[in-house]
Structures are given as structure tokens and as C-alpha cells.
Length: 240
Length: 240
Image (cartoon, rainbow over the protein chains, first blue to last red):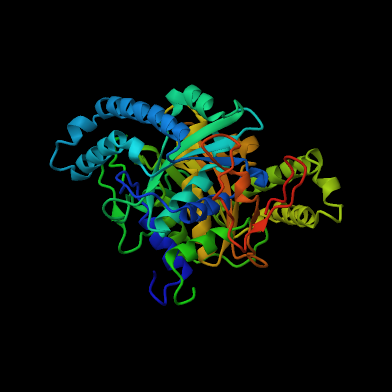
């Protein structure tokens, strides 16, 4: 519930500023009416030529859902274990000056270790009508963001990950997903264990330019209460 | 301003359900504080490993911005003219049973004819750290959607298009965009001429499945006030 006088913009900014990656979930299931509302929000998103070629395959607790979750869970543990070592998280998480990294590493380990127990998994898909293209994500990721924002605004939380690529063949077979359908991401949803603090990001002057690359926009000021990402080694972020 | 007792979910659902593509803009500029707030919302979005490798190049009225807008405007007119004929919009727009298509065709023609006068153009970019990949859009299109939602919640409107690909070389040269940076989309922003009605989309049962492809989720009901896309020929939608 918002304050009485909060405007749409204040609400929207508050929701987007606190929609952080949630990787620890309470065990209770999501009521179907809430799930329908979140997926309704997802499907309001734009897509190229409004083709609406996004699709969402929900996995909860049926035998086939459990089988698909086990395939994903095993792959997620494999991917995280490799990334944890390869990208230097292992070392960084032990440094006292990087508490956010240490928290992320713990949360990610919990996420992959408990993947099969996450209340709802949504496989976001895109029906391709032309060859695979880096621009095609404009027809599915806005819908994924709507889903995560609607989850946040409804008291849930989630995260999108893309560690499914190594097990696409198994998932296609289990879930009868046609070959022309791309698997764009895997979204975990549930009640957060813990709270939704504000996300930390780079100051907007670092990412908003005017009239040319790396040309700062002098008006691009962050709100007074913005929280920032600490500078870490390139490619190593706190994943909040 | 929302009703006193509107919850975050109600506000979010209302905002996402009325964030439709706006292609006619009033001429007044967007105050810089509003532009900063919208771009702040964009940058709160998630990205793979939280690398925040999205960037936004704002084009307003400087000489270089005008030059870039002219390059884009000419290409947009060329692309729309080709699409209008190729995809059958020309014929469909004349059918009385397809009023939404006729409106879209008129709006799109207005959009490309007045491209240079749109108050703000934002070129959404992605710094690549690995080869181009269809999944990479997960690091830039959620931010684009946040931007469009923040615009809507602030009384503005916009649309993302991807007709820049034919003039990337000219844009790179004009705006000094490095070769490792992908141009993901072009977002037009301004005060809408006309109103933001609810978007029309497919019923969610058509796009939400459970446990397998094309397996309807029995709980996937649309809200009572949802508005639907009329069925048109495949690939030909009303682009609302």
C-alpha cells in the first residue's frame, strides 16, 4: 500500500528501484490468482510489430515440472560452480571490503542448492519467425521485466537467469517445445526470504550520455536517495 | 495521481496495461529533471551478472543530435514505406473490419513523417563483452521497458523501434559509438498527442502454458476489464 498522496511516478520509481534479484524464497506456493495477475502484466509488454510472440511455460509441482526443474537445478549448480571459480567470486567474497560480493555468493549458492524448491519457475520463450538475432530480445525481455515488476509490486520477488542453454535439448523434449521457439530465460518467483532493499547501480552519469558516446549529460542527476554500486574489478559485480 | 487506497500492485498493473506505443507527440520539450527521472528508472533494471552494460545516448536539439535524427528519420521513412507495402498493411488498413490497423497505419505514417520533431530520442546501447548473442537482450531491454513505464507514469509516452540497423555506420560515426557497442533500439519520448488507452493483447491463455508447450494453464484468466487483440492474419497486428 502506498502513501495516500503518492503519484504514479513515485510508485513506479519506488517499485523499479526496489526490484532487486531475489534468490531466497519462502516455501509457500503462489496463489494462482496472483500468478495470473503477474503473467497478465508480463503479456501487456510491447513486442516487435506487436506480434506478441512471447510465451511463458510455468513449472510448479507436477511430475513433468519436477523433472524439468531437476534438469535445470543440476545444470544451475554446475554453471554456478564453474562461474564462482572462473570469475574470481571465490576470492573476492573473502575480502572484507567487498561485503556485497560475499552476500551475493552466499545467496547464489543457496539459490542453486534449493532450485527445485522455488515456488514457481517460468520459462520465458520467444517464437521465432526469422533467424536468431541479437535484436529479437526486444520482443520478450520487456515482458520478463513486467513480470518481475508485477511480482515485486505484489509482495513477491524473483530473478531471471540464463543458465538453461546447456540443457535446452532435454527441456525441449520434456516440455515439447518446438525447434523454432527460443528459450530466452528462466524466471524464479516466490515470496522473498528477507526484504527487498533498494538496488545499487552505477550513477546515471556513467551510463547516460548526450550527443555522443561517453559525453556526459549534465542534467543526468541521481535522486538524493539513490544507492550506488561500489567499483569492483571489471565483470565482477555484486549481482544485487 | 492514484486513488487513495490503490495498492502498489493495482498501480503497477494499471501502468503496464496502459503503456501503449505512442507515435504522436506534442511539440513541447521534456524538462531535464523528468528526463533524468525516467533514465534513472531505466538504469535500475537488471542485467546479466549485474554488469550494467546498458548505455543510453540522448538526442535532443544540438547540431549533432539533429544530424543523427535526420539520418534516422530518412531511414525510418524508407523502412516504413517498405513494410507498409510488404506486410499487407496497405490493403488491411482499408478494410472496415480492421479499424485498429487503419489507425496504426495513420499513426506510423505520422511518426516517421515527424521523426525529427519528436522531443527526445534515446539510442539504447549495449556494451558487448562477448560475441553477439540472442540472449544478450536480457541486459538492455528490461531497462528500455523501465524507461517506457517511467515515461507513462510521468505523463509522457513513447515507443521503441529497431529501424536503425541500416544506418548504424552513419550513427557510429556521428556519435563516436565504438564497434563493441551494440545499438539495441531507438526510443522516442514526448508528451502524447491524444490519450493512453489500455493496450490490447491476446488473452493470456493463448500465451501462458503450464507443464508443456501449448498446454493451457487453467488458472490463467485475464482481469475482467482486459482488452483483447482481434485476430488478424499471422504477423499482421495492430501495433498498439
